[in-house]
Structures are given as structure tokens and as C-alpha cells.
Length: 378
Image 1 (cartoon, one colour):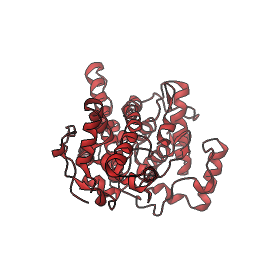
Image 2 (cartoon, one colour):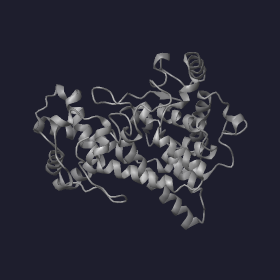
Image 3 (tube, helix red, strand yellow):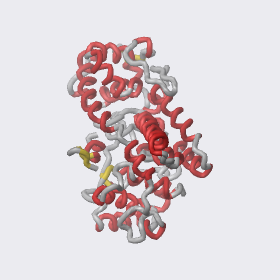
Image 4 (cartoon, one colour):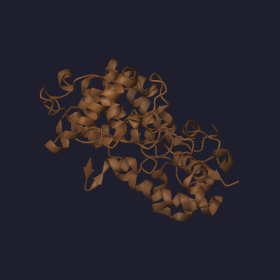
């Protein structure tokens, strides 16, 4: 998706011990006060896993509670239980029908249609040791590629929580101003699930970085795979179609090609024909008509990245400077686990946006002091 010359796919690619923070549900984290954190030694951070870091984070755990509470408010029991089941275990169950033979067949079909480009068969789809179990909990997954937004353990949780708040604000705005009553269940479910396969796509590696995402159907592969998973698990079409619109809206012909491609590709991954299933219009060229406005709200709600991608690009270099000056890391260390573990823990506890706010409002010294209050060099 392109917005003012910015390619979303490029952004995505570019991209326990005592709790270190506290944030009440509905409140912003307290950033910039040393008392907000229980300091952890740098040596201890080296031994922590992504799930440990996420569980220790006030912002991440509070965001997860908000997501769970919001999902619990879904009135339709089928939708509610379906969303809760996925968040509890975002397993790649679509792989149940993609053995070696089937995977090769769908790879060739998608390659022929241009939905797979510059990806070798052996790299097609992330590794899945067990189709019935997610490689990591939703709680610990990053929000995007390692150089992009929310690139820390629990980043997908803070990202999703913000998106849900934005989506519900839009729901209320359209209700109060236009007397337009959107389907609240669809608004919540589509946004809650829009990044459901980031735990699969962005698996953490031994060096502290996350797996590099590849492209599928013209966007980051997590998107189409997430849509396929929702269809495969039997979520209503209205939810899955709205979810597919997270990366682009169906308001104009060129824009609608995105959701159409993602839905048709998702259908092929699970052995279905999107038009025959009613997931697309009968000729397969558009979404079902009339188009649901929930599709647009899911897209509008998924714009946290507009702020958080630049914030990540600005804060990662600042963290590198602090790592060298205060933790004694070398330039070579900045490309490996010694820096990545430090960065992952600090970002997970304070969030990249929280640290950028501190840096922008109080300066580099305040940022440095806060980082030192989270992880002590000794």
C-alpha cells in the first residue's frame, strides 16, 4: 500500500524477572520517572527470552488485558469465541492442508498469477513445526520487522490495542455524528485479528532479531496469511473481509485490487475459490457489494504505523549511542545479540513511542536516564 510515496511493505521489511513498568488499563505508561521501573541488570537481560520480556512489561500486559476485555465485549458468541481462540493460540492451522505436494502446487499457482514474486519454493511460507501450536504466544511477538514499528517483544500487542482504540473511536464517531451504526462485533474482531500471524511470521531468532518477512500478494506475508487463517477457522465472511482491508481500502478501483488479491490468495492457500464462497463478487473483481463500511474502519484503524515507523527509525540509533556510551558495547556488538537483547528489553518495557515522546519533550539526557533506570550496566 502506498501512502504519499511511502510503501507499507517496505516499512514492514525495513523493518521472568521483576516487572519493569506499570500501566493501568486505559492509562498511558508513566515515562521518564526512574521510580516507574524496577532496574534489571544487563547481564540478566542477556538470559531473558522474548516471552519473559513481554510478561515483565507494564505496557504490554496492560494492552493485552485491554484487548481481552474488548474482545470479551463482542456480543456474537461465535465471533467472540473464534477471536478468543486465535488470540489464545495463533497457530498456523492453515498448514494442515499444505503438505509438501499441496504447498508446491499452490506456490506454482500463485507464482503464475504474480502473487508470489522473488521467493523460492523453500522460502515460501514461514517454518511451522506444528500446525496446531503457535511458535510463540501472541503476547511476545513483535509488531513488525526488526527495523520497523513496535519491533520488540509484545509489540504486536501494544500495536493492536492502539488500533482497537482508534477503531472504536471511529465506530462511536460515525454513530454519534452520522447516526451510522456499524457492526461493532465486526469492527472489534477484524482489528483484533488483523495481525494474528505475526507470531508465526516474526519468530524470534537466536541473535535477538526477528525473522525477516517476505512478500505475498503484494504486501507483507503476515497479512494474507492472517486473512487465510480467519477464513480457515470459520470466522464470518464479514469479519475476514474487513480484516483483509486493514492494508488498503476498497473505495477506489486501484485500491480495491489489494483486498481482492489478498482474499483470493488466502482462499487458494486453504483450497477455496473466493468468488464461489461469496468472499468476493461473483466475477471475482471486487469485494461483495454493497461494500461494508466496517472494511474502511478496519483500514483507518490500522494506521498506528504512520507514527510508529518513523519513531522506530529515530529511536534505534539513539539506543545504539546509549549502548556504546553507557554499556560499553562496541560497534561490532551493535549488530548482534549483545545490543539486540538490551534494545528488546528496554523497548518492551517503555515502548518505542513512549521513549520517543520522552526524547522529543525532555531531550537526550532524560532518555538516557530512563534507559539506565530500566537496565543497569553492571
